[in-house]
Length: 460
Image (tube, rainbow, N blue to C red; front, side, top):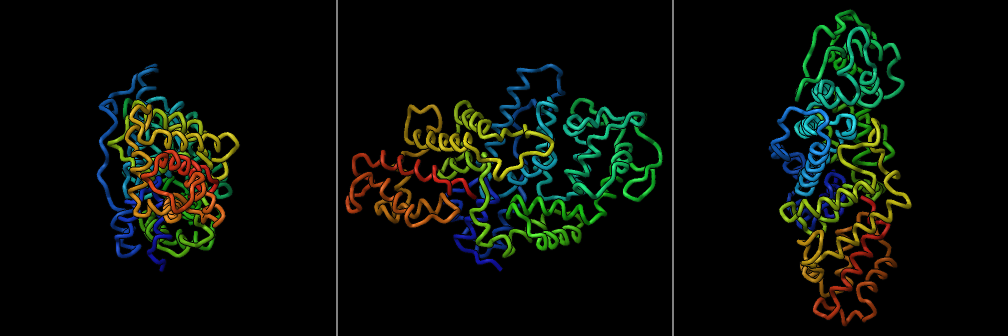
């Protein structure tokens, strides 16, 4: 059983949250055991948040360009707020996981009301029953629009969703045939989008016998999902994705099979799988710590958390607008995955352009610290005030070590730590360091920028 110590707590929080603060880490470690923290905090049930506006219940209006664009932006800011305010609960991480699994994107769906409702479905089902979630997504208005299910009928069945349901959402390539795709497409007919809701039109349904994955009957969409999930490959497929997202990008197939066995024994309930995964020694192997490249959302939200920002301090007309543009530049715009395959992640997050943007974002956050005239992030503490929140702030070596311990998951060499100490000192000697020394705020800013420009800072 994994030891519940600072190293494992940092690793768990970095993988299951969008970053964390020192207070978050201390609060997590106040739980007596890892198991108690996972069950009572990380996987605790929460009420749904209030919506981003009353418009979510309005019937969609065609060609509502500027209004819908503004709504998409406000909904994105709203989701940032949920991520920043997630505290010690991994629901928002799972919402993004499902958003990147059952992919829909705003340009095709068009109506923000539908994307909001899909987002709420993912939040409500974050670690619920995968069988039910798959059935719900199949007739979700956003998905019916995105993969053309609303256009499908018994005479001209559209195969887009049937194909992706098996290839990307449940089974993976090699576990079905082209005939299965065609037969599934017939069973999925009849569903249309009417205002905010999906409605079934029996006149558009293929009311005929279908043969799918070796079974024959007059199947509908629910039957198709049930038949797919009878195949053990489905459980392994989902567990492999969970493993790659939360543990390591190269799956340990033996452990994936253990996860899949739990998934099947619990009738596709996600929570028992997450609980098993997060409390197992496999999750905490040394080689996996600091081995995941942070996503843009983990990077941007995580930096704000590290400097103790909370949602109530954020200015949506400046702060979130800046995060929005920077996230776009970092190639992760929420509600706008690049394709039906979603964001691939890992090494795709880093290139010669995005690495520079990451550094520019962290530099700008530091530049705004304590600046009352700042455009963004006016409520981040001044450098000296933030530094003094560490008990070691007057000891340069210990202070650097504490900041590095909080900010980094990948171990830093002694040489790099020494270089950071020299950066903090700015030419003075250790004995002269004090947060009360004139110019300390300048040196602290240089130091924080240096920490967040390290390659190691990009790893979770």
